[in-house]
Image (cartoon, rainbow, N blue to C red; front, side, top):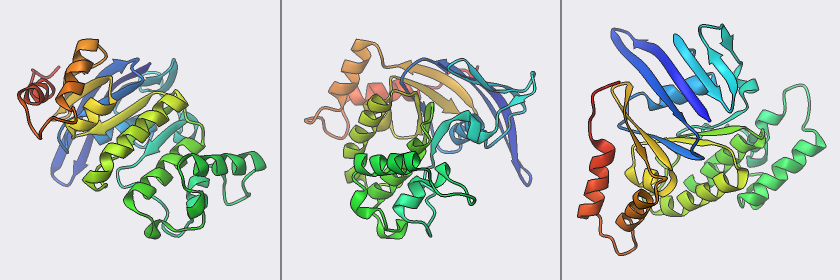
Length: 261
């Protein structure tokens, strides 16, 4: 169960943005859906401990990671959350092997044998073994994404946060990598929360979507119901053109504006 109820304010000079996000779900794969600048990334950063909300709480599978009223703020490494950044944030001076193992080591010590084996297993799992000594600049966008995903999984997280995982990819790669990400979610059996402004990401991957607008969640769309899932799949069938009445109806369902809660 992911349970988030937070408020925070960020400022940039005279500009101010207020976030008030509240949602809870036991869905294996959930999405935060909405336009850029609506507060989705701030929510993920607060969940990971990269930002401190002004009020509220963040709970994961019964663990309280943040609670303003109780003075609880678990440091990011102890939250056991894997985070895939939008542009992957790979270290350009490190190899694929070193990037994946970065969170398992420190400047004081080398990787333990068990950690080295875990890095090798992840490279094998994501087809990166032949690129172990390559630097990020030599990799394709899809390869960089796999390195970043392997790094996020290296520390055996208890949840995985994905910030626009396909935004930096060539559109022709997205379909195949959506399938791969769905398989990763099934294999690792941990909750996955993805933010996106692409309706295809929601339909292909999510059981539940929370729709953001101007710093608030204005709608919840549950795709776990068989009829909803079947509807979504039909709308994206191989024979489906770029837009159809069914696809427009689903887009309307996700984008319909409701009064802010």
